[in-house]
Image (cartoon, rainbow, N blue to C red; front, top):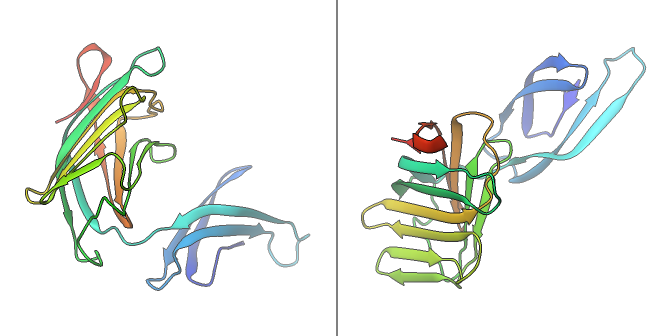
Length: 205
């Protein structure tokens, strides 16, 4: 038997191996945001053995950003801090957004790229590094810092552009690539198929 929380209903449990199970759940629309523990125990009448895994997963707010990468290129090198990444596409707030606004002076940004289970994460803090002009916001890494990250958000044109150089990106287990962006408390995500390009690169077209 599997139990998570009162606002998370377990629909089914499938045994994948001696130490692996798959759990299908339904989350209540009023569920409290945050991390959840998972408890697994034997059926009634059997010797009770309970295993609790703390903070196994997180209930996140509804996705309030429409994020659609339309072009990208990833170049991986054997030596560390030699990987490069560019991604561009469209971005807009949807109806789940509480205010439809991103304020870089007080709100930071987080970008995740790679496999869903272990993406590479770039954190862009609020305030420092940001320049704004109208509805356009740009963030640059400090000089000589690695990796070098540049993010351009244009909410007038509903576009974004990310450029990363000098990075050590987590290896990809497949060509199904997750790209996720969090702006303050607003998040959008996209999973797309990247294909092999020239000289060992991966590209999104």
